[in-house]
Image (cartoon, rainbow, N blue to C red):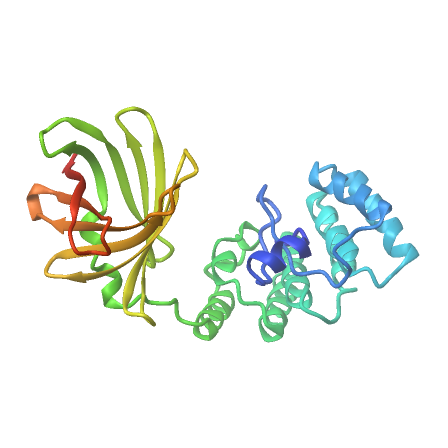
Length: 313
């Protein structure tokens, strides 16, 4: 079902309007139409809502909309609170007050949920069709929402699911070059060139294949992380590294001949500029080599900073 309304959080993070089921402890909601700063009464109601004190929250939001019927967020949360109290007719009454704006598709969806909970199949399916026509687009929620357990599998419900699926934009597919660094993915024991234990690292693919996340722990217990991604506009790789000492480094790199080479620049406390080169070699079954070099003369000469070998655990 429905939604917790958080304009400040949703607007800054996703700008996505979505719904979640009533029986789930984590719920999301459509963007409200009120200012981000709540009044004291709204803040009190929100605190009750956050504690899942549904009876008290419902009463608080009811008082707010009695005083000001234009409070869309209060109507949305009143509907949610009533739904959680199994007051489905009351939830529908609250959601029906949301007749326009970005929250309207979510409100219509939640009405369909409330009808389904009352085993009113015809009304639920009709409301769900209205929600989809109004712009509801959360296919994953629709497929998994337990509010629709009684309808799932019925021809009309599956038809609506298919309709929403056909209207949903295709998931972004990263370019083929985004797989160039896949040889680094895995759980690794990391050794020096002499075979000493240097640390452990876990590399995973994240964000629909758009990036790799590094989780590094040295043999001394220090840790660091990096995000690595291919930028198709520039035709190059990026790495953003930060560790528990506060050191932060940005690298750019290119892939060629089973080798991804990153470069970066730093300045010492004395003001001397240094160039850094970090190369990852795909050694196949033998693992991965990570070779770091540094130059203090603008790239005329290079010295090894580190030479590490990744062996699969």
